[in-house]
Length: 556
Image (cartoon, rainbow, N blue to C red; front, side, top):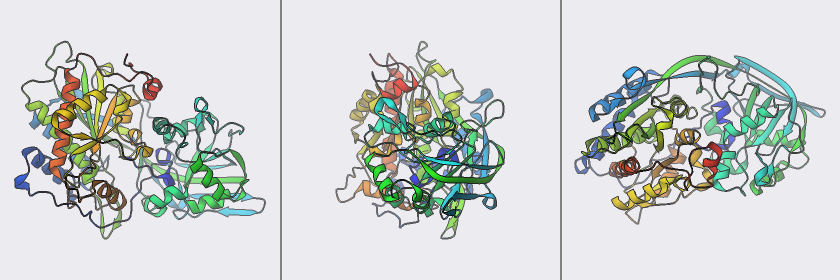
C-alpha cells in the first residue's frame, strides 16, 4: 500500500519511498503450528513463503525477481483452473514502464534573497524529484506559497485565489483541510490532483514542505535514506511518460528543518504557518527570493507484467461481465541495508495479499455452482511505484472495459493475531456495501469501521485505479479485534507500520496468523459470489463523491 508520508509528499511526482527504522518483532500470539492450519491457511502460507523468499530479491517491478513471482502466480492460476486472460491467449499482460533514478551529484537547491543566499543539503534537508521528461533540468524562478494546493471552490477552499503561480515555483503542504469530509480529503490530498492543478495554472516547479505533525510519525531520515530507489511511470503508445506533468520542470521535497529555512521570509513565523495547516486556515502569499532547482535523472525503458486469470461465468447472459479481484505482486526490491539485510521481502506487503487472492480464486473455482458473472484475477505490477499496473489494467483491460462491474482489492492485510473481523475500506460509496455486509454475516465475520479514516487509504491502493475509471470498488483490510482480549491487534498493526513496513524485516519470520488470512479469502470469495450472482451490477450511491467525480452508474 502506498503510505501517506508527508515529508515526501511528492510521491507521485518524485516516486520517493520511505523505510521506517527497524523495531522488534511484534509481540503477537505465535501462529498455530502448520498441522492445525486448515487447508486454505496452509496454501496461503506456502505461497507467502515462496513469494517473500530472498531468492526473489524483493519482487521489484522490472526485475528478474518480479518475473519469477509472475511466473509462479501464472502457474498457480493454471493449477487452480483459471483460464488465461492476458495478452495473446496467455496469462501475462505487458505493462510498458519508464524507470527513473536520481543522480546525487547533479542535485542542488538554492535560494537567492536580498539578505543572503540559502543552500539546502541533499538528503539531510531536501530530495529532488524525478524528471521523466528530461535527463537533466535546472529551473530558476520566483517562489509562491499556495497552502495545500487545493482548488475546491464548491467547498469554500481555493488556495490559488489571490496569487499568480505562472512562471513560479509553487511551495505547498501535503494533505487537504481537516474541514473536508474524509472522501473529499481523499481526492484533494492526492499528489496526482495537486500536480495537475499546479501545471494547469502555469507553475514551472513544485516544492512540498514537511510539517512537524507528520514528521513526528514518519521521520524524514527514514524515507530520505531510500533516495536511490527508482521511480516509474507508464509509457503511452507514442513512448511518452504518462502523468509526468512536463510543465513542472523541477520538483523537490523539504524536511521540516528545510521548510523552516525556506519559510523564514514569509509574512508570519514558520510555527504559525505549521499551526494554520493543522487548523485549515492557511493563506497563500509570495515568498521572497528566487529559487534554483537542478537535478538529473537516469531514464530507462523497462517492461513488467500483470498476471491475469479468468473463471468463466455460468450464465450466458451475464458471463460477459466481470468481477475483478486484484492484489499487487511487486514490492520494493533491494535497498539500503538494515542490520546487514538489503532485501525488502514484502511478506505482508503484499505477498500475503496475493496469497489471499489465490485462495479466494481456488475456493470459487472449486465451487460446482460457478457464479453467473465471470471472475477476473489480476496480480498487478508496480503498485509501489504509484499504482501503475492497476492503472494500466483499468485503462486497458484485456476484456471490454464496460464489462468490468466491480473491483475487490487485497493489499497488505496485517494479520499478526487471531481476529474475528475485517476492516472494509470504501464500502460506503456504492451498493457493494450490502454485498459485503451480507457475506460477512453469512460467514460470521465482524465488520469494523476504518479506525483511521483521516489516512484516506481508499485512494492509496490499487482499487483507486478502478474507481478513477468509474468502477465501484472495495478494499478489505485486516481486522483489529483479537479473539484474545489480552491482545491489542490495532497496536500490533501500528507496531508493524513503525518497525517493519517497507523494511527488510517485513518477512516470513513475523508471526503471521494464516488462519485469519484464510478467513479473509473466504470472505472475498463470498463477496465475489454475491456480486457475480446478482441480477444487477453494483452502482455508486446516489450523490456519492467518487461516482459524481468519475462517472459510472448511480443507484436509484
